[in-house]
Length: 396
Image (cartoon, rainbow, N blue to C red):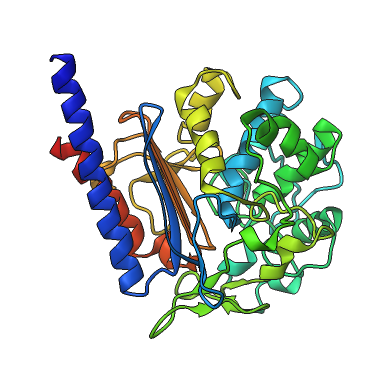
């Protein structure tokens, strides 16, 4: 293929991608499923789509900007997980050593009273037997009775107290024998503090966000004018998320109690699983540093370990065809998942309305941060965006 033909195909592909993604985003805005969004698409290390659309704050008529800051919720998890992997690379953390090496006071029991061994790997892969309060059926669940924080409420406790409460609840299963989405990354945050000898926010800055130039990613937001206002899907249009509002994520679960104000509170404990804020471009820097395996953040072999399914074949609830690595899900079977993504694709999201994925085989990274829950995390927009991107790639 000549250089001129290749250039034409690249230009045509970029135009097709832009048109397809623009259509998906605009439709979600027009149908009032989203209030605002920032979408980035990178291919072969080049940013081929970059757009902010809609409003960051509807009541103030503040337009969305590419550098808008979002409450990240579980988008915090890959960032904090990467910080732990940096410590593994430095020999300060051992994947498979017992957790009590760093947290001797953290000794949750099984239902029969035994105190099992928990490893760092099991925390990273959500196979440690822990759970989440928001996934319980009602307010009388064991995590609710223990006052466990999901990391997005107004908790009023420090990280040590958070761990004490988590450890007081019996484990849901023997570590390593099942998979369950959980507060494990909050526990991992305490391990990082002990191993690195610094508070979690400072540790993450030194280990990940600083080296990668993720200057807008932190556990506290100090410029409210750059922060997206959070909204909840409703009829006829999303309503503004209220302080203390509970929004169920899945049918049959009690849901998340939100404190939008928490992100301004420097005294709130740093939730490694849900407590950060940041921008789409910052997240893309992390994803691309991992995808390219260029050693800028982690050795290639550790990135490969992150991207390996660690569940032993366990099925993720509501996600057929997916396993889980160290910080994000891993696509095992595209046919079962009914997805155009390649096997081995990494994916996760965030409850404030976010989705991202990395397809290493296609050399593709996508970030979509919105201010509308839960459409931006599990709604129609997520699959429409995915399908539009792959459709554009196949058309050229």
